[in-house]
Amino acid sequence: MWYMTEQEAKSKLLARVVDHLAHHGLGDLSLRQIAAAVNTSHRMLIYHFGSKEGLLVEIVRAVEANQRALLSTLQASDQAELARRFWRALTDPALRAHERLFFELYGQAVQGRRGTTALLEGIVESWLEPITEMEIQRGHAPEQARIRARLGLAVARGLLLDLVATDDVDGVTAAMDLFIDFMAS
Image (cartoon, rainbow, N blue to C red; front, side):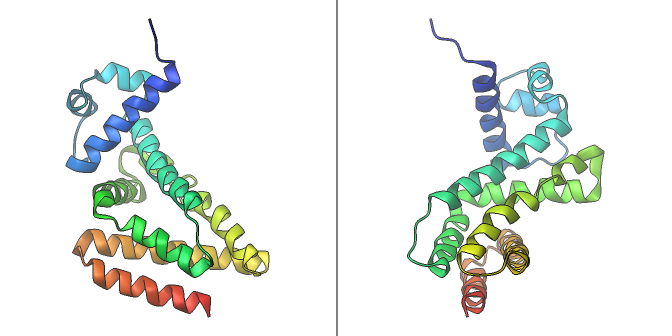
């Protein structure tokens, strides 16, 4: 008989919760309601994540880690093409629900709602390191590369929020293409 490790069980449970919340939103769901929606108990969620806030932290980290993993798999002949491919992947309609969930949780953390501020730990820094490295490879000095990385992250998140709010794929993609051209020049 095969048994899952505790980490495997936690990962599978987290994936189910992320998928459910991405498609239905978080709203004011209780831990018990979330548990029922993914066919587990609230005690199991508490066991693996400590609290609702702990679960929210893990959700944001999982969504962000999936996006960074996607970036690391893309190949392109130059940085501008890589940026365009990544943007096209992020704006895939299949990911829209996950983007909405990210911004819902991010907004709650920024508001300080129910102790969710732990969500903000690393929310920018986790992206700055890989993007800064890419900018250094393009020939920018480390300090300038980090500034460019922060600007790129801010623009991408802003346009993703615009996309979630308006569903204007053509408009946000045109804006991102212009930004990529600007950064490449």
